[in-house]
Image 1 (spheres, one colour):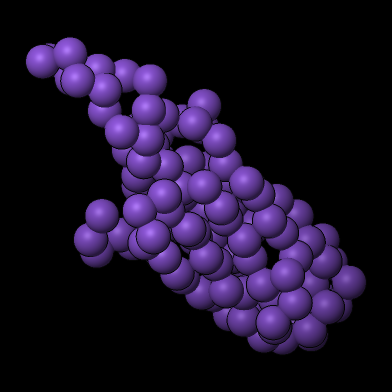
Image 2: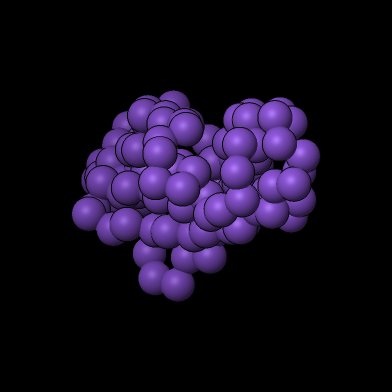
Length: 108
C-alpha cells in the first residue's frame, strides 16, 4: 500500500489531567487469508497486525489486530493529558510496511 494517509483526531488543547479521546482510521483492505479470487485461488492474508501510540515517547496504547478486523480499521481510546507534546501513531502491516502519523497537543 503506497501513500496511505491515516485519519487521526486528537484534541488540539486540553487541561492538565483531562481524559481525552483519541480516534483514528486507516484505509486498508485487511484481507483475512480465507477468501478466494475468481479463479479459486486463495487471496493471501494481508492485514495491519499491530497498532500502537506513544505520547512523548511513552507507549499509551497498543492493539494486536487479527484477521477478523474489518476493512479500514477505526480505533478509539482514551488517555490522560499530562503535558504538551506529540502523539506518534504507528501501524505495522503483514508485508512489512510501516505507516506513521503524529499530532500535537497543548496542555495547560
